[in-house]
Amino acid sequence: MSTRVMALTVVVVAVGGFAASAAQAQIRSAVAAEKPAFKVPRTSWGDPDLQGVWDYRTITPMERRPELGDRQFYTDEEIAELEGRATKRMTQNPDTTVQTGLVHAEYLTDPGRHVDESKRTSLILDPQNGKMPPLTPEAQARQQQGAAARTAGGAGPAGGRVDSYLDRPLYERCITRGLPSTILPTLYNNNIRITQGPGYVAIVHEMIHETRVVPLDGAPFSGIRSYLGESRGHWEGDTLVVESRNFNGKTNYRGSGENLVLTERYTKVSPDRIDFRLTFNDAMQWVQPWTVAYFLRPSDGELYEYACHEGNYGLRNILEEARLADKAAAAAKKQ
Amino acid sequence: MTIRLAGLASVLLLGVGAQPAAAHHSFAAEFDANAPVTLHGTITKLEWINPHSWLHIDVKNPDGTTTAWMIEGATPNTLLRRGFNRDTVKTGTEITIVGYRAKSGANRANGRDLILPDGSRLFMGSAGTDAPQDGRAPLGEQ
Image 1 (cartoon, chains in turn red, brown):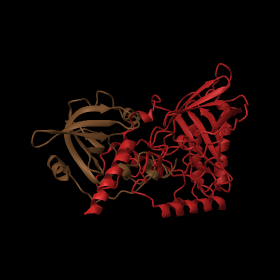
Image 2: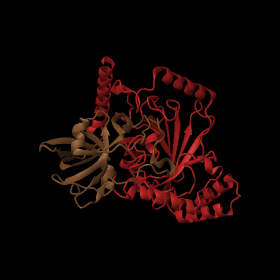
Image 3: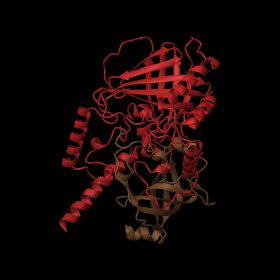
Image 4: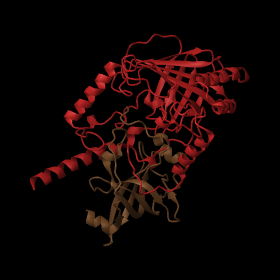
């Protein structure tokens, strides 16, 4: 199935000149047209069966690189080059003369080595320019205020302020990765496990080992806010649709927090692929909703527990480094 | 500390620059990308713990004493997926570590390469390629 979609994509790319929307429609119609050929397996109680451990590693960027302009798809040559470079990165000795360590040292990470099978040049499917939509005027003002506050208060040392553990991000403190970050391709632990029961779907996120138990029975949102918000699901044909809202505002994604509404769509399109789509909607943040899409593949192995807090020496070390730096600065001042 | 370290490890200053970032376990808040270090020592313990593994080694000093170092490695999940297991790196094995020192000069480092006695390397992977985003999460996200 996916091979056929890819073949069609190649044709779309080859003929060029197609409007981006036409290309996208082609893919969608190809998926739709192929649906009768693939009968989605069912659970014993009759729901589409999406269960398993699914891997969403990809080197496809969230937003299209500017130099690609309006081009929606990579060529096969570009894919070969990108994947070759990513493979080299994972298998060859590091070059000691180049920069390291932006967040994690890159050599500690596992972002995969594949361009998404859609061949798109961005994970963002909509808008078709492959970019996040513009911020609302209110969001722009908030962003400017935040930048001004940081300038006034000082950005702190490299890596951010370290006056207290409370200065450190929730992710670094092993509290949560937050939604949607935990479902977007990232540095490592790009796996989820889907488990189904009558009336419920459980989604386990490997990154910081969080689980969402999603009711499918039409239960209303309670309005209780939490780090992962509240998720409610339903079936649209063979597609699992999960809507999440009521985030507590302590996590945010590019400025969007408590007003964010996320809609995930999981569609099994072949025995070993799930077409995953995620729509962001926050009228306070972006001028229009936007959607990312990528394929989930069966994981090579198990989903491992990521009991992040068990040995979080890093947080302790970061605080210790900062206090030692304070002492050194104080001593230097006295001299 | 630096003088002592120079006696037991080759410290290479390559003049590379690090950029600050605020995300999970900021490298820049803990380690100095301008202070690569090479250490030769014997493994005393490998802690398979989250969010990151920690390798403990004893580095021999010229006077016969040893200094304990802690080396940060990838998360156990990533190590497992790269083919590591408990038999890959055993206590007592003499190894070489290439990594980056803690900013304060404490005996800690972020490990980039682990070189086994037969010359094979673990924790492999080139830094600094310009593949799209290089797998980095957009900075500042939560």
